[in-house]
Image (spheres, rainbow, N blue to C red):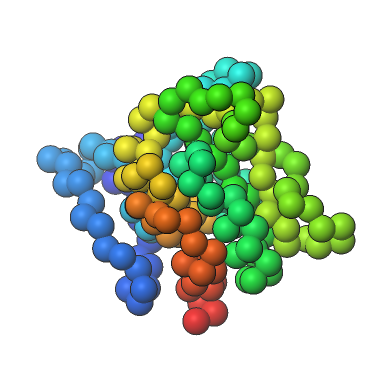
Amino acid sequence: MRGAGAGVRLRLPRRGVRRHRAPAPADPYRTYVPTARPGHRAPHVWLHGPDGRVSTLDLLGPRFTLLAAAGAGWPQQAAEAARRTGVPLTAVEIAAEEISAEDPPTLGEPSPHVPGDPFTVAVRRPSGPLLSPTWAKEYGLGPEGAVLIRPDGHVAWRSPDGPASALALTKAVDQVLSRR
């Protein structure tokens, strides 16, 4: 696939969306420059876990997915946003470096789970943490940032620097779904 095809982006409504400058390739028709700006396809980044390598794209699925910096509190905020909006969210934490076994980032079982509630956030848990020293930089995130990705793999919203906020995530989901 040539750069123009891989770098396709959607035009999103301007209201409430923070603008971030896209990198400018010398030849946009032949050169793909990965970016996690809202409207663009989520970029591929290799992550390392106890079961080997996994791509960030393999974490995406049939619902909205929130990729977040480990330890920033985004899974709890995603659970609250899912409750407020009625939209199921999957939250995945990714660490930039080795972390202690007592506080691993998460990646499968619903948590917190309310029996019969289809809108609880799913927090995936492999057998250990997901690590990548470069994923946050490649997604344009700081140490407390997060990015919300639509089921079709396009970036819906990005909070480059945090802090984790259920209100901001709720507003983003509502805006993406044209509710407000």
